[in-house]
Amino acid sequence: MIRMEPTLKRKWIAALRSGEFKQAKHKLFNVCDRGWCCLGVLAVQLGATLDSEGILRMNNTPVTALGAEYLQTEYGGLDEITQSHLSRMNDGSWLDKPSNFNKIADWIEENL
Image (cartoon, rainbow, N blue to C red):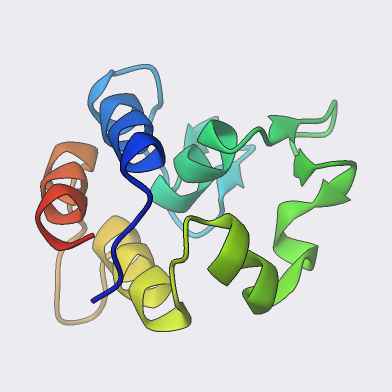
């Protein structure tokens, strides 16, 4: 398993547990719900901001358009498998119920 940069990891875990971010599904930031995926919370810790249309951007580029390679390096070294696992924890699947941000933070703490 990948080891995340410790300072970024602490910031991400603290943000997930802070109560500042409402959890939502299926998008880094869900405009309708005004909520976040756990990976969207990470993007904010890396400096991404919301534009006036609710699109999460890093250096003027939509985060979702940056591609998997960018996410693997800029997202604290999270490979695609780890990103998928965190996304499934956040959103749930046909087998599993979604995990709340506290449970996701616990997983990050133990595994990254």
